Image 1 (cartoon, rainbow, N blue to C red):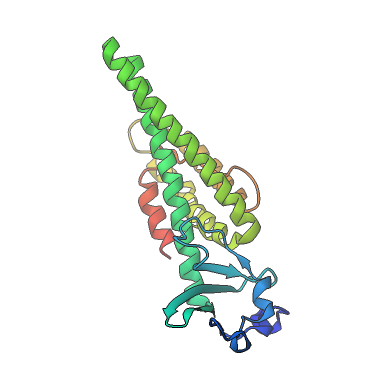
Image 2 (tube, rainbow, N blue to C red):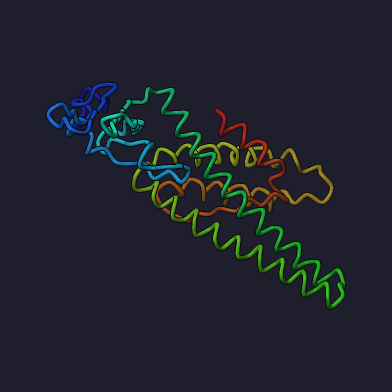
Amino acid sequence: MSPSSCSICIRLGSVEKSYAAPGSPMDDQPLPTAASRLEIVPSFDYEDKDRYHVRRCPICATLYSYRFESVITTNGEEEGETLTRLNAAAAAIFLHQQARLLEALRKDIDDADSAAGRLSDYINRGHPSPEEIQRIIDQMQSQRAQVLHGRKRLHAQVEAFRRSCPEILLVWAQAHRRTCQYYVMSTEKSASRPGFDVQTARYVARTTLEAWEALPDRGETFISINSAFLLDYNERLRTELDK
C-alpha cells in the first residue's frame, strides 16, 4: 500500500512542522492528529529518543523521521517538531543500519561464547597451574556473563522489531539467508580439502539457513555461526548487508 492510499499517511504531507512559543498559545501550530497514530520504531541506538527517532505507519509501513528542537529566546523557550517522510532510499538506509546493529550485537555474543569455550578447553587440555586455573575461571565467568547479557538484549530487540518494524528483521535475515545459500551450494566444492567433512558442512549450512528463515516471525532470536564449517562467513555477510 502506498502513502497516498493509506488512511493515516494521506493526512500527512512529506514534511510536517509544529511550533509552540511561550506567551502566545493562539499562534501554536501542532502536528496533524494523524502523526500521533504513527508508532515509534524502538531502535536501541537513539541517543535521545524524545528528540530524535523514526516512526512507522502501522497500516502501510511508511517510515518517518521525527526531530524535536528547542531554542531559548528572550521570551522563553520556543519548541518545534519536524516530521519527514522517508523516501525509498532513506528508508533502506535506516533498515540496513538497524540490521547491521543487530548483527554487531549477535557477533559480539558469538565471539564472547567462543572465547569462553577456548578458555574451557585450555583448562581441560593445557595443564595450567592452580593459580592460572582460577584466573581463567574468572575470565570465563566474565565472558559468560557477557553472553547472557547480550542474549537478553538481543532477544528484547528482536521481539520489539517483530512487533513494530519486521522489515528490519527481514533485511537482517535475508542477508544471512543469501550467505547460507552460498555455503549450501559450495560444500561439494570443498570435498577435496583434507579432513573436510562435506556432509557435516552441508548440515550446518542448511540448519543455519533454516534458523534464519524462521527468525523474522518466530524461532530463536540468537543464531550462532559455526565458523569452523562456514569459513569466511562474516566477510561474506558484510557484503550482503551492504547491498
